[in-house]
Length: 268
Image 1 (spheres, helix red, strand yellow):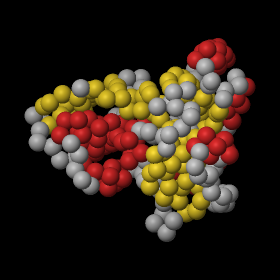
Image 2 (cartoon, one colour):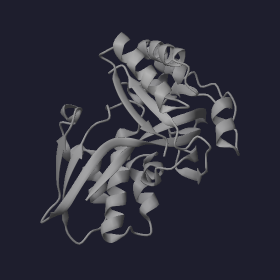
Image 3 (cartoon, one colour):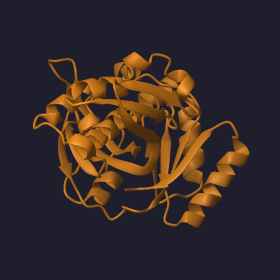
């Protein structure tokens, strides 16, 4: 069995305030790309994890990997041998680890079903893991675990992910946020909410990693339908009206910056 760990993007991300528990109160609009990491699984006497792919070298502690933690969080009658093809950059604002954990939950659901408290188990692994289990467009509130799935007009549109191959710590970006509440995220129509929204972590991320500003500018110069930084960065995304427009943009950016990482897909 195989399962894709769909790349997560934040069409908008409003940081409202820091909570007493140390987390930040968030309002976000999650969307997911139909590509990402790939997990392959087969029965085994005991759990094991093998990591391959372009970014496998970053994950040098398989026992500390969130895939192993997700396996340990779910009751099962037997072991699983998992191969993780790590195609998404790490610390990139794409929820790569959370997406991997979400894929594990979907695999276990197909094999054995999930326990009734799976949502709580997922949230203990990370605030955006519950969203990544579903991997559908949804509003997220609280720490991101309070989900409201929505139907969006932009579903199926081509999307281009671009990362300058710079890892960026979520903790550092939140620490650099100025703490100003700039107002709530819109509700209702997700297209309107995305267009009228913002990513409050964009400016602090650019301060820490100025090349993000360059990625955003050059991506927007290709005239996408919509473009923004995802999560805490450093990945930016452009949503295009046609595959042809995306192909032109990808070629332009590849020619100018052959070292930048790219991935193409469509909004789920």
